[in-house]
Image (cartoon, rainbow, N blue to C red):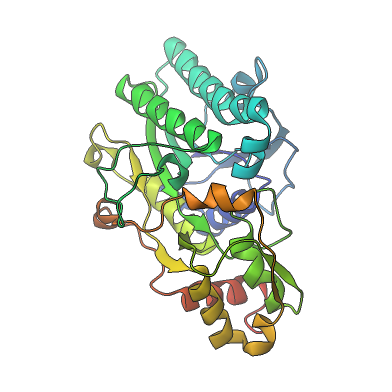
Length: 326
């Protein structure tokens, strides 16, 4: 089994690489080699087999063809610029999030013309494909009405994934990830970044800025759950999906206030006191149009599993990133 991870230098890409190496097999086959690609070359993981690390911008001519030159059996496409950056830089957002994805799909299609080649491809989409007006709980039949450039780019990618799968060029599964919290590392340019920051920083004694009100509700899953989604999608029998190749992943709906109370239960008042409220006129409107709660029944029935409480999400962060204690 030859595996390609695009976006391998990012948080989820690194965790996914590690999880695959720990497993040693997927789809009933031993993992023999890895190709790890990102805009900057990822670090080489500790893996006994061949590993190729590649600096690659898929939106540049010829790059996607080079990245899939080894004809990977399984492709994870995680690469994208985040929501806030895609909104701030219109051209860059469409170039990376749309053009790069289409060039990847095209490279796979063209490779299949010369030989029998149809890789399994797992694509990370986003709940940003949905936008107001929305029901209180969003079901699997909700139409896509994105209200951001990022959401629009992901929605178009979903349609491309379904069509290239329908034509037999690739065997695609699109997973709409909840907002991932608590993200380790430093803050990024995602409009949703504060959802992690108001927990991550106070847990290690640092101040965090909260740019929205406590009543803002959102849909969450941990990084550990996200890796579980990716692995399960890779092994999913896509015959069960039919023509609907994109799935909303299970998650947990809670408010910012609910996050803060979970933090209080686990880390106490001292941690909560480190949250500084500072309204942001840019982030507020972006967040206001995002979906707040889902009935992810289709994904759940297909075996995808998320957390049951926000306390669990914080505990996952403490276990996986802080050595199990604070």
